Image: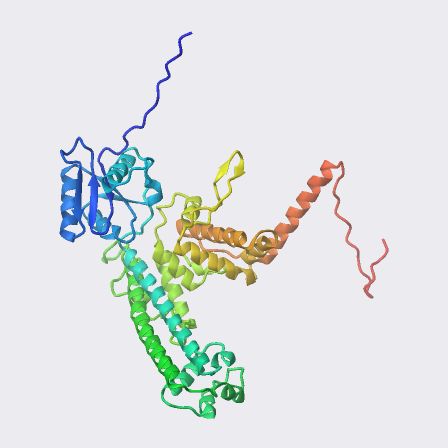
Amino acid sequence: MPRKSKRMERLKVVNPDCAGIDIGKDRHYVAVDPERCAEPVRSFDGFTRDLKAMAAWLRSCGVKKVAMESTSVYWIPVYEVLERAGFEVLLVPPRMTKQIARRKSDVLDCQWIWQLLSYGLLRGAFRPGDAVCPLRAYVRQAKRLIEDRVRCVQHMQKALTEMNVRLDSVLADIMGQTGQKILRAIIGGERDAQRLASFRHRQVKASGDTIAASLEGTWREEHLFALEQAMQRYDFCQQQIDVCEAQIAAQIGRLTPPEDSTDDSPSGDEGPADGSAGEGWKTLSRTGGKKSAAGDKALTMALHEMMGVDLTAIPAIGTRTALTIASEIGPDFSAFPSAQHFCSWLGVAPRTRISGGKPLPGRLPKVVNPVGQALRMAAMAARRSQTFIGARHRARLARKDRAVAITATARELACLIYLMVTRGEEYVEKGMDAYEKRCIDRTFANLSRKARTLGYCLVQAAQHQETPNGAPAAD
């Protein structure tokens, strides 16, 4: 019998008006459809005028959608210039554009990206809108400054240890009110241990004699010099943090929608330009990073107005975590079709490397996501929370590995955040009693199912009445 000819289905062009860009440090290679231009591959320098020339050439070729790799930070200027020029820009992770063949060059890479995009095989990575990007940049800058300030404190602790000044052994925080007074007095030339111990605050648990004993050091000149410079760097970082927090407050105010949308104020995502919604709060006080109650409450209210819901109402979600979520995503979650997509982007979704019904060995690709990391830290803090989520997290820790339990709780927090923001509903705490009742009902259902399997019927035992002396009464 003659063999039946089977028609092979081929890929269809989904995006005819597209282009691919291979991003480099000093030069970018761009590829378009060969039928649209006699020279389908061109290279452009990284200067701004060359990027504008790139946008003009793509417009002359009839291109509407552009894909590029997220190479370091070199893609940011190209992305911004093309987006402002009216193109739909897709930022693609490098793992999605790996060449099948072994040949590798910049020209082949841009042509391969164009070909994948024309067939609809590329998906763009998430990037918040232009209104949220400034807030994200300021929050990330503040985080880096806080890390620098922490390193300054570590340098001060090292200098004190080298002089055998054991101040960190008697004070929980050497940059608290008592610690800063003592350190600045030492830098000023004070060496009398009793005089330094007189700066002790009344709430410090250590006695004055104990603090005085810890302040008897060698006072070597080189270590005092290192201590002084570390303190100067600490003060400089604190000044920069204050300026950065003022910018964060202003950006939160701009992203906060106006209270009355029917007035003559300009509509849109931007609120009052003066930043009044975020005015008056300071995320970190001058006492080593501890949050003040008034500043924390003001920041929580500002984030509530910006996001539309109070994310800090969720147990283990603090103000700093809510600020990270607001700065990295913004109030618009429309880029994520469902909570599952949101969890996958965060890197807290269950693994899907399955073949033959069994999970494949090996590690999953590492996802570096600031929001996912913040939610994992919040999940670790939920261990001591006397709430519904805290009880569930402790139950997970009892039956799973610690890392798996933390990721599972982080996923639960992510789902709650997604539902709150997309639906505009506030979080309602169920309490630990609801979780215990749920566990009892689940245990009863399992026992009933096992009893029916063995041919028995599960019957609840009668309640025994107690006599006044505490002994059970006879039936």
